[in-house]
Picture 1 (cartoon, rainbow, N blue to C red):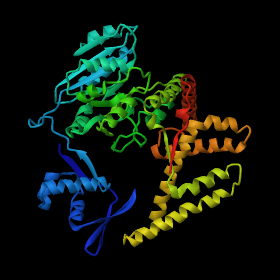
Picture 2 (cartoon, rainbow, N blue to C red; picture 1 turned 90 degrees about the vertical axis):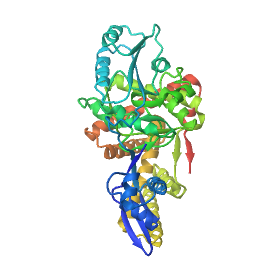
Picture 3 (tube, one colour; picture 1 turned 135 degrees about the horizontal axis):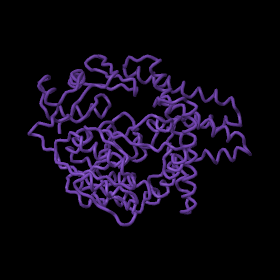
Picture 4 (cartoon, rainbow, N blue to C red; picture 1 turned 30 degrees about the horizontal axis):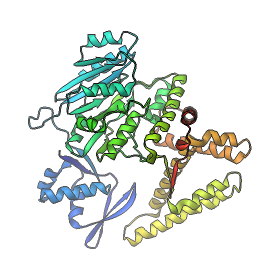
Length: 483
């Protein structure tokens, strides 16, 4: 597979003697470059392959390829596979088996299969539908649709078992999963399959969008659902910005599926998280790609919405019983511990400590500015201050969001005795909601967004508490702290 490379937006390349310095504002960093690296970086204003750049710069392909990958790792270049032409006879597109589990969704299934048939994938393709003991006319609809292969379960077994049943008869080199309440884009597989040309890549997931933006819940879920993974291509790892990939849009090598033993059918929910974590632990790369999208039909009724969020909350108990090392991680940089400690003490103890806490980011700004100037990078103090504020804002979102998600209801209850804890819960909820609202920009009024966000966190907590009680454990409610 050939990659395309392009210089990331906003890079400044500054000269300093015989060396060049690449300065980026988001993230704020200064990277020394030799003349060769600087020439390569400057030559990547537009998307180019290694071969194209080698001809332009008159460089050997091997060393240039290594240099490009290094610049991409330093976040100076964007990197993506080159899209192959569908009519290119030199491209060997792998055989893909698409597995769709379904239960009592005949009309949704018809739309899903229709979207799969409208794909422009140039390789061999088969569609496998697994009916999970439907009690309506779904089996008749499947027969009428004449899919490539179909399985009819006689006992209800759940989505994980259905996905395993479909994969067990799959003939493709790759297995692609989507759900019966999803419709795929025509370019779904063409966008995601090229990532498997890298032998170490075992799982790839694409973007999940809301099918409609008619209701408030749909508009909220379009940017805040657990299925939404953002706009940036990233490697998926536990306890990172992309900790898992949903089966609504997931591709896996069939040999890896066999090596892992498929989904764990004992999971009532969260089986996709478990599979991705096991794939990562087995040494395979897991990639999220914000393309190759599917459109998901979210449940629009408030009761179903809250029950689903509670169900998701309960999944953490099952996951942590099997993956105890993947407990939720709260990370605070060591130099910022005084800032966090002063803020916590300000609630109901000494309110003016908030002002003292504000001195910590100012001191860090001054220190970072001196370091960058000693590095001979020409940066403005305003840039450093802006980058520091962004970093602190993201850290506070991480802390406030997790406090509200795991302990919000408990803090509100204890607030009847210690009012400072009540206000801590309220501030954490409002700050996390505001940060997410500004980041994702949902087509929704902020008060409505806060209400749905608070309802989601409350339902998640109740679902988690219920499962913890059932399994006699508090592990999901006790995140690990790292400084």
